[in-house]
Image 1 (cartoon, rainbow, N blue to C red):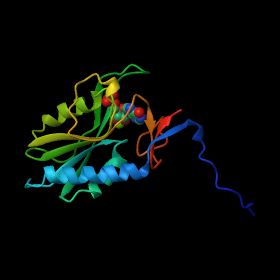
Image 2: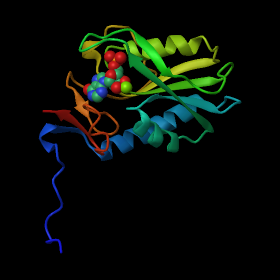
Image 3: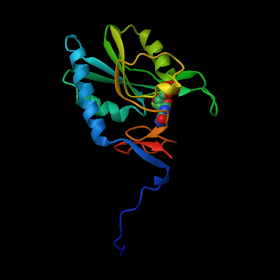
Image 4: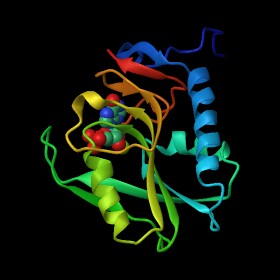
Length: 185
Ligand code: IMP
Ligand code: MG
């Protein structure tokens, strides 16, 4: 028989720094973003296409999708760096959208805009598919390290120059399950 004991501590809790954005604040902001996006696209005559950047943006996208009051489809893209170690290499798209985007209204969904390189490379590729419009929604904007000028049409929160985890964002593949956003210690 097992002894009754307290539930186990999250194994790597030591990496979790201070809470930056609570799950409640995220939920409220994502609802607002959903309303704003639904208003902007109120008059389009085909369903909006959400193009979600794997993997970090999936949690945000799932909540955002359910806060929309307009029809929307889901597509995914995945970017991988050719670079080795810490030097940022050229980006290659490891997965591209499956459906045609010609004439469609496309909203790219990203978790965080840091240097801006990821979305810039993906937008370049998506434009070649001749969408009717292409906009960007990002849960987090960390402008301190921007290298490529990036226009963010819908921003959740602007954050200081700290690496963050939770709500889809990972550190070495972990912590995506945290309901709020935390700094890394
Ligand atoms: P960028 O290309 O430099 O703008 O980087 C954006 C990508 O890097 C995002 O898709 C994230 O996956 C990842 N990233 C950047 N900053 C963080 C962070 O603080 N936590 C987790 N992932 C991050
Ligand atoms: Mg990412």
